[in-house]
Image (cartoon, rainbow over all chains, first blue to last red):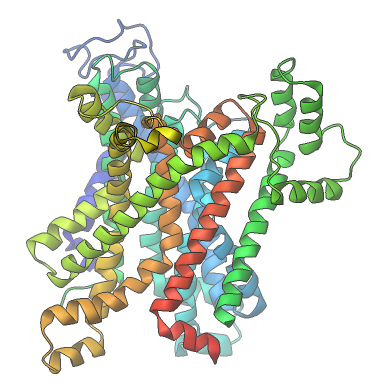
Length: 275
Length: 328
């Protein structure tokens, strides 16, 4: 923990997260208008009333950007949390349990790993009748857990035969008790790094699906902003602010998660640490 | 041999799982979406085609679920994906056949270039750890990995095709026979340049970070210290000792990277209106053309499985430990 406070990458990453967290929380205070209000003159330029102009549909771009942070943060954090729970079972428990349990679970992981996630995602989404944030989160979690599970499994296997785990086994603790109270605390860094990696994946994939129009296009998110920009031919109209800023926000938030992922990894793995 | 057998086993198992998933998914969904689709296309299809579709998706058929499953497996394995709805009466296989070469070219180019360049940069960054290069490359790598592919595509398109007019805005250039002529070939290259560069750029990041971190790990190993103690030149240690061992994890993560490239290709083909298979998949999804969608899904999965299998074989070729382990 203290090492993280001295890690510049971790600090920048955390700073970005805190920034977007505050924006999302205070959205009603920061945004001058409702993001769905379509009563403005379309395609206004930058002005005092509309800091970043208005969209071809007549919404305030700045208000949409501010509210869009809610969607991305929600999807990123909740998906990552669900993925962490799945990985705890498919990775940590599987690796610790060994034997046929591990055989079955790790085969499932290996199969899942090879299937291209986004293709799976698009195909599943195309069959789901109701499109909304809940559907999105579930589908993202279903398709995004496998890589981390494999990493966590190998960590659990490495810890399995260590003396303190052996001692817990001798004292008759149950399998899940050992996993949660002996194994997990000793691989906490990897778990946290994984969490941020999963959040990055979720933010990017969600934005992408929204951009393709496969999410709920009436929800305000950075991805749907780009979807509407694209379908209104913002490029040909020269509305570059409308094209540039949502993507920049996605990139920034993604970089925040990515930096934290990298930094925690660095702190948790002594071999990557600088001496 | 045992290694090979295990890889083939996994290949077949994964292929089977994907096919089964493809079969089960439409039947799992509430309010069978296929029924809605058929209602939408009514009148556009011949009665035989509509009937064939109903049977294929388990509507109005007396066959048991299990019977349907085996019919489906048989049809898929013999490449019978039926007809497309949006491009009726075009066959799904014909459409895929037209689109596939475009994607193979694009994805193949991006994968190879990103792997080679990313690996080289990663080794350099690790070797000069803490240098200016390293401290620039790590955040660059992280940022490249956090880049929304479609957005970068849009920006590239806006600047280089729309504003500067250096490259065409959409399409792939004339394919087929047009490729044989110099101007036809030139058109294809010009159309492919922007999508290929974008796809390469976004897949670079992962390789840089992975290679840098594994190289750093390898550099602290005893055999590298020993090589140093022997007085070998630094360059030889970097390439023949460190990089050679660090590259192995890059091969095992090929499956992940390939999934990433395929994902990138979907967005890129969409943004650049590129006539490849991913764009076709997008169109199939948007217009709920389920037969076309299923066919493309199978083709992409098979393609990825074959690529991963080949990378596994290369891995065994590069790492003697795998072969020895499997033999004992």
